[in-house]
Length: 105
Image (cartoon, rainbow, N blue to C red; front, side, top):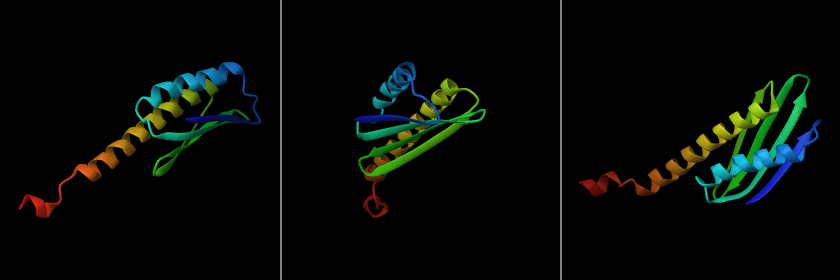
């Protein structure tokens, strides 16, 4: 998995990079098919925005969140991203494993 962390109007410190990488390790357990992940952190007045663009095999995901604190924004972003990955994984498994209605008759 390729990980890229960028900051817009915001200096990304080593502590924030390690925090984001630590959160992504938990998520990587759910989705082994991650090809690349781009995390963009930005500050606009009092709003801290965190967004992630993930390239999976077969789909691209985009999740974003806005919070008053950057660490809170990263936490909520990773929770949303985790739910989106699980939803994508379940959806792709259900399509392939569902029997056709004609086969049951």
